[in-house]
Amino acid sequence: MATTQSLSAADIKVDQTQCFIDGKWVDAASGKTFATINPATEQEIAQVAEGDAEDVDRAAKAARKAFDSGPWRTMDARDRGRLMYKLADRIEADMEELAALETLDNGKPITESRTADLPLVIDAIRYYAGYADKIHGSTIPIRGNHLCYTRREAVGVAGQIIPWNFPMLMTAWKWGPALAAGCTIVMKPAEQTPLTCLRMAHLAQEVGIPDGVINVVPGFGPTAGAAVVKHPQIDKVAFTGEHRTAQIITRDSAETLKRLTFELGGKSPNVIFADADLDAAAHGAYVGLYLNQGQCCCAGSRLFVEKSVHEPFMEKLTALTSSRRLGNPFSPDTDQGPQIDQAQFDKILSYIDKGQAEGAECVQGGKRHGDVGYFIEPTIFDGVTDQMAIAQDEIFGPVLSVLTFDDHEEIIRRANDTFYGLAAAVWTRDISKAHDYAARVRAGTVWVNCYDVFDAAAPFGGFKMSGYGRELGEEGLKAYTESKTVTIAL
Ligand code: NAD
Image (cartoon, rainbow, N blue to C red):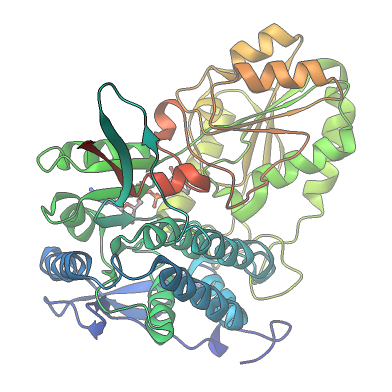
């Protein structure tokens, strides 16, 4: 493999394009395939097996058998952890190749794949590997002459459905806790980005994770995804994606009463007080919005700036934004790649039109970049008001809405004026203001004087329409377990 300094899309091997079911690489039962597209060139990368309900059924039965008869759930938990460490080591050894495959399929800059996505992937799997032999219940003093204790047991077969924005990272966040708990998995990667998840399944097989423990069925949401949600042998669904899809999943899973965890969208408020370190805050606002082409669930897309510092702050932010380099995601100098696909590209441009029609001032960007690939200029709207669509809707692209405010009480109310509640940030040197904001903002994650700090140990998830349940940390692990109470008469 060439080094990333000289990589081009043509250097990347695409090895895994079939379904992975019960330890075997198989075509979809229907024989159908679909194209996965390079968003930087709009060219097809590969044809991938198009799984549907029949493939999900095979995968669910394999996962059920692997769960019920072991050895994954029943093996010494230390050995389970050891296999997970081996998987993390294997991913680390193949880091260059995986980063390149992610960049090819998703379009994110190679530097981001290597320095952000991959390290977090490896951390998440190692973090949960360490948990495999530390899952335990407790003893409970109850009335009478009884011994009462709880056991924490694996929830069973976990259905996992992920989006395209962080394909490998979402895979690791889902596999890590499920594997540690002793669950088996039926995963449906996003149709736009199936390649790295399939490659990770190959690595899991190589390190000796037993057949049937991990099954991957690529395909589309309404067919393969819905089949995961409805399958009676799947006990839980962990979903990351849009809240509208989560609503469908809630309805579709009612019949089988699945345990559900949802990581959904956001319109996160990023608040800059006048007493903040404005250089750091401008950098935080820049990273908080533009990371991953703005395709982050927790993007700080509603930026509130205290009126008295609006002008100097905007100077700093627009200077940073104009230095942004768009282009070939395989170039190590590229800061911003293409949006994921034509649909997202069109949606983002339509929001830019809407912002202009609503009377916000487009002070930077606002157009397509180049004429091949789904590139959009980093775009800043100033003079935005709370009720504009660009202040309310998740755009999921490099479009920032800047609003101003005057005082502390006002900003708490306005920050909460959204039906989402995934993340929030505040920049201030006043510790009381920071704690007050952190306590009163209705969001699952609050960053103070920083943005986009992730760690496998820190729970992540949403309030309100941003979902329920948490990933990462101990809470993320518990979401893959059931608690059993045992009472013994003495
Ligand atoms: P999406 O909901 O359209 O698709 C996500 C996944 O769901 C895909 O694999 C898709 O095939 C599948 N799917 C679609 N319809 C389905 C159905 N009826 N039944 C079962 N599965 C179905 O979302 P998207 O556009 O791919 O991703 C973007 C969204 O994901 C944004 O809203 C973003 O904020 C959110 N997201 C959230 C987090 C988080 O951690 N909170 C992280 C990343 C992305």
